[in-house]
Amino acid sequence: MEKCGSSVEEATVRKMGTASFSTLLSLVTIIICTHSTASSQVDDTRKTCDPDTEICELDNSAPMVATRDSQIIEGLRIEAVNEPGILVRNLSNVVIRNVEIFHEGAHGISCNHAPGLVIENVSIIHTGARTNSAKENNISCNHSDGLRIANARLRGGSAGVYVLESMHAHLSYIEGYNFRGPDPRGQLVQFDKSPNCTLEDFSVINDPNVTRSADNISIYYSDHCVIRRGLLDGNNSPWSVGVMFEYSRYGLVEDVDTVAQGNGSFSAYPGHEITFRRTRARDNICVDQGRGKPMSNGLVWAGSPNSTGLKLEASNYFNLCRPSNLVWHRSSFDAVQVTKKDFSPRPAIKISFGWERDVPAHADP
Image 1 (tube, rainbow, N blue to C red):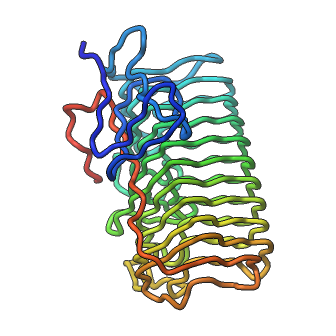
Image 2 (image 1 turned 135 degrees about the vertical axis):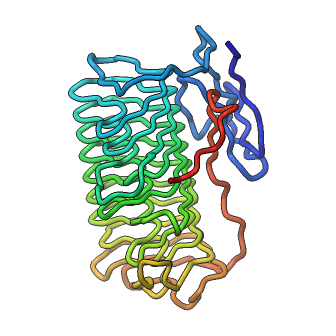
């Protein structure tokens, strides 16, 4: 068997055991076949492959159902039609790692009452055409406190990750493409009635000819959530935005860039004590992208009239289609610090898995 390795390709270099983060060039590329969880604060060259076997090949498998607490499901390539690729239900501390899933007609990974679930180093692809079902998420978890997802490439699901009534979820290094709804799905990530959650180091790229996006990131009835270090590129919804806090309090968005947004970039509607810090927006779209004209007329930062305690700090914009339509409702913001300044958007997350070295890139159906 070929031993996995890591490489740098317009990449972020990560060195085991150091405590600094060094970003090189324009793309984050990580060769992965590991069971170590990513840390956004540690610059490390990750362990690649299982340290005991150093094998990165995947075994073809039928859909899997976890059967015991602390079970490890790994090293599989799963094709699933009309059933989840992996189902975890009423079990604790299950680990899913080094798995590739092709799914249609159901979620890629479905977890229900699965506290402590860990999902890492996974590629999950919805292979069917867009349907009227909003229940074909790449990952869908409910009542699963302490969920951990790291190093996940997600493509074409109703949503990328849907987290429902699950406290303290932590998602990092999430690479997403072309989420297709329909409403109420269409997000890269949604935290729904799930307080104290974190999403960091993420990107989504939505082709307007493929996606049917909703809010790229949705925080819904979820207090104390943090969204940081991300790129949101593409949103063709006439009524949705890049990052949306709805009926949520004490939230933070930090170091997030938006590109090619239609209806808006950052919003609290309503939200209370929400901070948008070092947020940036450019190249928004004020015309119909096939689903109707943006209802906000190209607004960037929004707070509903019944929002309170909003703060917009150290943020920038450039090349907007309506540069006068920056912030509304101004009285909902305690602070507004926004400046016109050209910038290059932060690099998209790009994860490469050891088992993919000779596999052609997937094309959306």
